[in-house]
Length: 277
Image: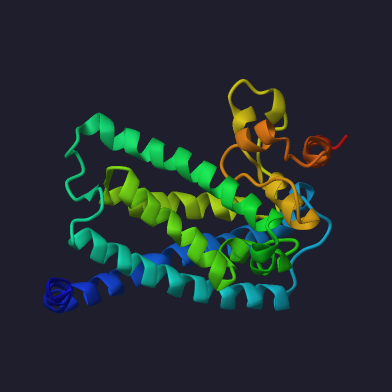
């Protein structure tokens, strides 16, 4: 314990600097993928992409303000947890390392893939647990007050759920040898995907389910239906675990095709108008 205290005392300026930089990183991600996405899709493009709208309604101003407040608290929890993880890294008790190609250039890319697949499983398992295990359900359902969701809902969590989401980074850092770069890079990638999942508009391929490559991916429709019905559709990046475990919403594919059919009709109508037919 005295050694730990002395190490922390010696590195307090470094820790404060890290906290300032991490705060900036978290805020910038939120500005880009929440505020930026909301402005771009709902305000700038909104009037021209109504044919891509997934659900019948849009989020209210009161809902968005609540999402912003909860996101601020989530970011604060992430800041504290991130700082704790940084201290663990400085104590050299994690598997995280600084030099990006320390384990070779191939492993640099492989480590991202491992982290990505692990998070896909972790999210599915914890997300489903928060729905099916009563002690956690009431905490998670704070997130479900966002219906339909907006990009601001991506991090709109109860503090307990924010902790569960943050715990992933600790498990990864202690289990998977990982260049520190990916802890930040993957968070940005996750924020990007989270933005799409909480977006009200569908942009994926109309023949997604029969496409030779894209069929494996999740869609904004998938997560929007989760927010509407409060069950089914627990995955984040891929539709693998929902397919294996039989937890896709029964109407998911039909609803997706209906949204895409509306888009195709709108495209055809615009072509006819252009040709003045």
